[in-house]
Length: 429
Image 1 (cartoon, one colour):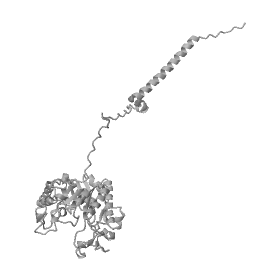
Image 2 (tube, rainbow, N blue to C red; image 1 turned 90 degrees about the vertical axis):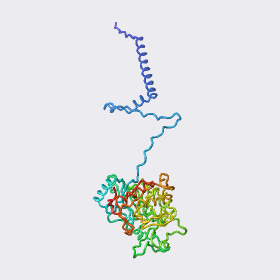
Image 3 (cartoon, rainbow, N blue to C red; image 1 turned 135 degrees about the horizontal axis):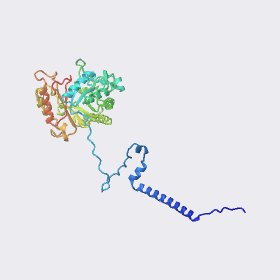
């Protein structure tokens, strides 16, 4: 009889093993669920897991810390933002003019910049478009080329501005606006005309060297100057001085016409132009200033700027006031201002000139610049005049320059620029 092996089944032990397995699985599931909930509830744990980077841990780096939640005040508003730092001063406090011959020569320019720094200057003024209408830097504007206004000794504006900044100085680019007898030969229709004729008006007889002017009331003439302002700002010259923003001066002014069909508000025309030019400069990170002389600010003449000089200044935002005694000639006698031999007493001349101009320059009494209509800079005479009679003239040295500065500062103008057409400045510092 064949033997049969009997297979025995331990049913109880199998049931126990199955129950233990089920319990283990349940425990793992609950643990995972709890951890997941914990990660979502506790941000540091969640961030640690989601930002886990094995490489960073291998290199001994700590995982990135979670970004702090924004603070909210009890009122529900966001905390105050950190105060912004004041804007860097664009215009220098102490600057001196350098002539084109110096700027065009790299070695002379370097020496001049070093000298100005030693004299305490923080800025330098250079001509971008001079009073003859010549553009001194290498311009890319088509009008400069077609006007034959490009200087033969043109230099790179961006490189020169960079060299000035590396020397620790602020470049101020001066652009003569409507005093321009170069462009008028090619922008013929944009020149001041003789009695509404096609003929260009000139400011004196040809025998005396009379010159034509660009018409301040002409759109194309204005566009030309604005384009130069834009190009200057785009090439690193943030401080731009517009000089010659005026109507012509000279002889036979009653014969000059400006294309207007009615009454011409000269102040409004110039203010409108300066508003455009200022906007163009600021759109490119620049700032604008315009030159004003004391003769006009004191009300001695309305030829240049019209009847409302304050409107012109306000439109520019900054006035660079020519306080040089030379401009008063051999003497002035008027209801507003009386000066005898102005060059011989520079302190009194500047002091009295600014007093007579207080309403225009400061919008009130002398010395109230903080409440005035614009920021002010005074240009002082750092040279001996060659235009005055010998009896009314005086050699200008350090004392004469210092007296002008003292008068300007006492009147409330603390930004001082120095003018010597030759760029020598032996009387400064």
